[in-house]
Image (cartoon, rainbow, N blue to C red):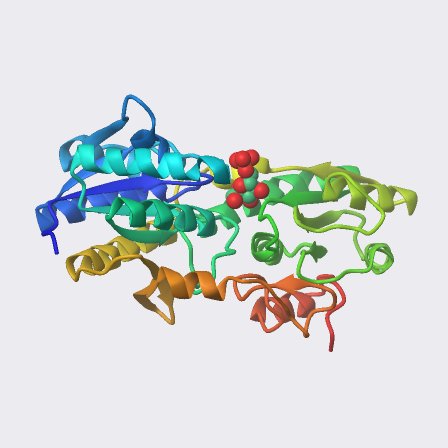
Amino acid sequence: MTEIKKIGISTSGGDCAGLNAVVSSVVSSAAKYGWEVYGIHNGTDGLTETPLSYELLTEDNFSDSPWPRLAGSYLGSLNKGVKMESQLAVSERFGKGVAALGLDAVVVVGGDGSMNVLKHYCTRAGIKMIGIPKTIDMDVPKTQKTIGFDTAVQQTTAYCDQLLLTARSHHRWFIVQTMGRECGQLALHAGVAIAADAILMPEIKFDIDKLVEHIKQSKRDYGIIMVSEGISIRGHSGKPADMVSRKLTAAGIANRTAFPEHIQRAGDTLASDRILAAGFVDCAFRAIDNKETFVMTTFENNEYKTISLDEFFKSGIPEKDPNIIGAMTSNAYVEPDNPLLRIAADMGIYIGEMKK
Ligand code: F6P
């Protein structure tokens, strides 16, 4: 086994708050371990494009700046897949890039897609890889926390807090469409935080007529209906918020749609995401030092650990969950025993038609 001297760090996939906190922690931990850190620019592009694009990161030029608390990625990121037919060529260029820099290990901060692609590239390049999970979608299995989620919940909550004021003035309902892909975690958490009137998630079947009834029976004539971008209504197409809006308008309910979009990935990084970054990086460095490879850091039951990427991929395969009507779910999505569902329902929030 090679002794570790140089590591690379890459942020991959959609950006979010907390990526720079991870990079900052990597830089300070590397200083303690006596390793050099190379920041790879723009996901894997920095190692696969010509000329290579990277920089040596030191405590002097990175940590002593506002970057550790800012969202976005100082290194730049890449949110596009590589076509199957070009994967071989790209992985070869990746191997050459790794060799040119003389890297011994790469820390990849990404979601499940990035972990998958990077595992393939790093295997071919014969280099160690450690993953750190990040995503505002919270659709990554085997970890109770991911970098960026808490700040995204806060951003969405703050956005809705503002909307509620104009909603009240004009006696209208706002249908807020959150990000999250096929996962309703962001909508659920922000929806509970603002005490929304309804939360529609892809994992839980809902009845639009029951939603209309619920709104009509409200003591207020304004409020927020949180809609996750992954929901669908049979026979309708277009943006989910627009679909719900049309139904409400047809029922005579004054409403507007609102799209917080990429603002959900922005904002000053919350303390909890910075702490998570520090914990994941501490765990990742111990793993590298212990000669572990192809593992991902996780946070479960108040403990930072690593799990093998193979175990991680296996657990992410979606399967039919008998407890949710008509929904596909993996254990990373909103599961029927998620305590927030019961809490939301007890708060009087319409969350769909769960089996009793
Ligand atoms: O996966 C993160 C995410 O923000 C999703 O919630 C969203 O659907 C998607 O990325 C948006 O991607 P883009 O930045 O390419 O618009």
